[in-house]
Image 1 (tube, rainbow, N blue to C red):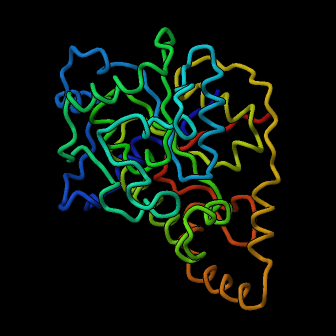
Image 2 (image 1 turned 60 degrees about the vertical axis):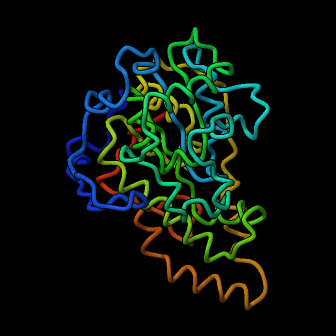
Image 3 (image 1 turned 180 degrees about the vertical axis):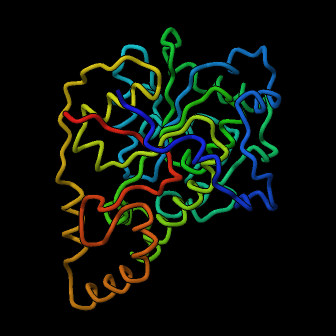
Length: 310
């Protein structure tokens, strides 16, 4: 049986002194879903809907993961929406989308993109508006609904305030893979892309103590042990495991790492300097610039999964 690798009590003991983007210090005591229900009308149907939000930087594998989740017979994901990657952010009009603050490789720098329970946007009206925007693209006969958008990575406290029974799945991927795959859109430097990766994940990590039901997983674990990974994730979501008959590619991150180490002497030298500058910051999440797979566990304060041996 899959279990929490990190205890909830250990996670909730993390102190967060300031919520970036809220403009002030917030209470460091995490609150229960019941506390958040006071912010919305308890008799509204959405207050207790089983919604799972998937988040992670662009090119981290969130589309693949959301698609895999939606293949479970008890889950419905947004489909046939007509918007990019069927992301719920593009259907709603309550909060700013990533593109409004630079898009891939940039949005995590914007204070306005980090929303929490302190946001003035938290209201029953907001929750109803978002549900109304998403409902046409869900099969609501399914007991669990999934919404995936990359900026969910730094909006989980806000989303929990609106949907107190929600679960959150955060996907992290090697910073080099994310940077190399994103730069064609961001048009920013290698250093800026790595810095963005660090900044966005630091913001995410600071939000974890405030969340009641969240798991942080790594792309590399997902693709290398897919069946066991999905079994553990379905159990986290309270669902029976199903065989998805999927064999993801496991060589893509290595391809990006090889590209990182190629180029002219000037390019290689510049990237070596970037690696030295950010080495300790990416190692915090288990990654190094020399290996395509994580070399260290996630911090003890980060809730993740125990993946059963296959």
